[in-house]
Length: 184
Image: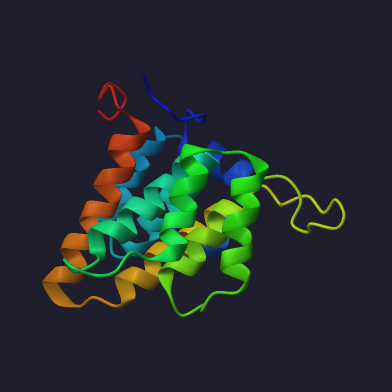
């Protein structure tokens, strides 16, 4: 069953106008996964990372970003607290775990991809501020997930970068379309 809530790429951009700032390829009425594959094969495949972040529902976008970061870590790397906090929220999406991820991100190093994926989880809904209601903008999770993955990718070069980019896009497609029927 597909986890996508959009039937065309255009619907993604209509729902999230901020996507146009980071994805310069003109949206079409193609199925979102067909559009994603075209982005991945185009002149600026990094745009596909942004589209992945916007096309997935919030919880799936956080999971995708966290798993993408994990896949890029060299073996034996200590567990990243930001990634762990984001994964904790995906597994237990209560406000308490969301706030824990946000608190970790607020105190984290913004040079680290894990901080951004923790922000993605922290800004997934509810209030942005603990003391009073300040709703999270609906596109903030996607923006933070995109930054997390692109920050991790920027640490790689050459073939390693290209392979990781391809793996991130393929992971998004698998997550979005677990029945494999809407990708033709």
